[in-house]
Length: 76
Image (cartoon, rainbow, N blue to C red; front, side, top):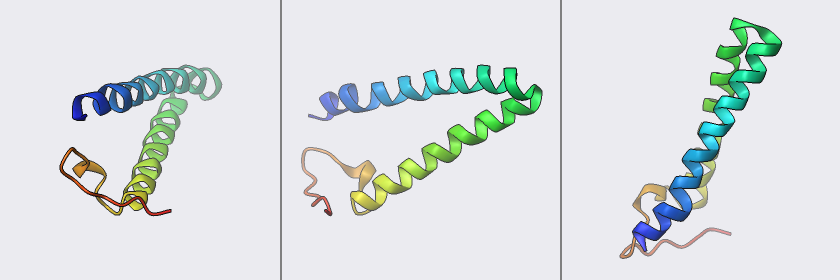
């Protein structure tokens, strides 16, 4: 299950971050010049941190401890 979860959850997550970063960098550079690169990086990091914190809350602080032998109750 751990390998399956990484393939289904981790790989698409990394791909979406890379695609989002490239699109943000291109559009921000075009719209704001060199200052846009910093805006794009900040936007990606901020969105990722918000998503990570939300997931940590949702899985009771055990997001990175999910596995075969871990019994985590998902909080509704």
